Image: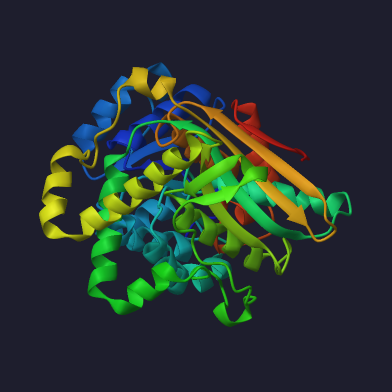
Length: 413
């Protein structure tokens, strides 16, 4: 019989701690986790884990190491039984992630990851939602820049509207106003994998294109007629002028819609959600937005075609690579989520964070997610299964991120 989550040897295991983002997450916890939190480092090489531990400083000197390979089901089950929470950075998740999800769901172990892979999340829901509900495990995907700002931003807008009798959310748009950061080699590798699966399997392509592909009951979703992903340049003076599709919108939008569905469509059955990136007004805005849209199209098309993929692979970062510490420190993001409610009220949730979004800011988000799942269980929403950041952690995570220097503020537009 597995020990209860309260009696387990570890409170958090950082799995993949020898990888680039895994090290950053471990370093964040070494600096910011409360004294006495039982943290361990997990991965497949004891020597590399011990080397990482030695580099983290005195607060991590006594952290245990847990050796497990992502394909070793017995070792993963033992890892899951040893801890309250697993925070994993081992991707691409579609290739490597499902055995750990299944193990955590079976053992009642909370789980957080950084996936941006819709196909993996759909597979995880199908394989582990029922068992996680039964065990009480919270399986929480997208606990980084994919998709915490999007998911918490819409959640906070819906909560504000409800608390102030402003109705439910309808037209809702996330606008990336400014962002600075490097491209993750792991993210590029995940994108390659998703493209390959979609090309090889028509069913996979259908899942990726379906705006409600992560919903718990597809047939119960409203038919709003315009929930397809944005394509090309959008002109909207109220949102700042000319805008282009946001590269992560195809993932984030599906996570937001799953949050809405898991709460019984508490955000609103007429929620229409999209994500855009600001080009700006005249005279340069149209050209900037067009360039962003074209660049996104070239990247996806280039990775889909073997000749151009070979060229792109020479310049894109490999898995495990990332920007320098100086570059990570200079990064940031500034995002507004705009909504109009069923009563006609207009609200904005302002989201900001220092640090490279995919690295420094993501390490904060994953680290605080792990701490929330491990330490704040009495204050978390009463939910289990394959969840989203909003439905698993809600206000608790928003409060933790604010305390860590991130901004999540709702105001009237």
